[in-house]
Length: 146
Image (cartoon, rainbow, N blue to C red; front, top):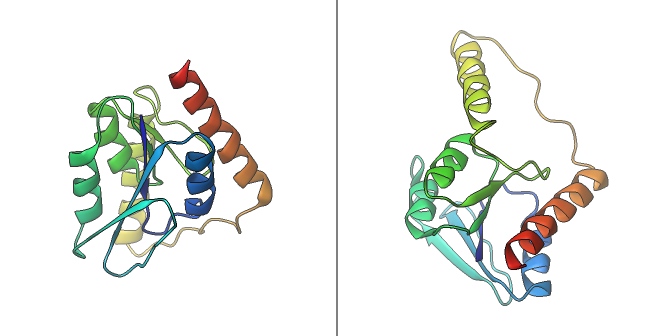
């Protein structure tokens, strides 16, 4: 099992890196050229900037059982198709049961924005969200290493 991080705009990179070190797991962060992420003991792969470039590079690297940290529903769906385990920055594990509804919500939000509508952005990140993410990621790792 490896930990992959969709590093573009990910608020839990440091938490994920710390957890990977605790469990002695290989952690790979992918980002595009508009971001610079370098963490000791972690592999960072920088890909050319482009629509979904990081997503496609990441999907081509993952294997069954790898864990992927992402807030991108489309990437999560591709990870599920490869039998990887996607989790978002708030600790929600994406599954075959919930991904369809999430993709539908994303589509509806895109339609609202395309028609000139505005949607409220996310609230400021809290310590509770970080704690929930950390707990859920460790549960995934513990479940897979037993």
